[in-house]
Length: 114
Image (cartoon, rainbow, N blue to C red):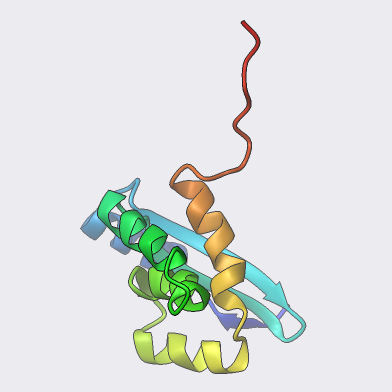
């Protein structure tokens, strides 16, 4: 399948060496035109709190995932990422789910029986 944007293992290794092994994520999705891969930092507690505040603000709610993702994308460049968003405007929602899952919001928590 065609690769619209690729994050190579070499690039990923360099980013992990620079930012920390557990802080860098590689996310990918398939579109009818090909595969899009990005490298992103895992958001920290402060960034997640800012995201939650945006969700609570009616004027900022729609852009909350895009803001969270945009602030943490390492590859592609911001310019290239903006180009991808022009062509594929749903990418924040697509990549937002696994990004949130990586920081603990998986939706799989259960109440245990006592």
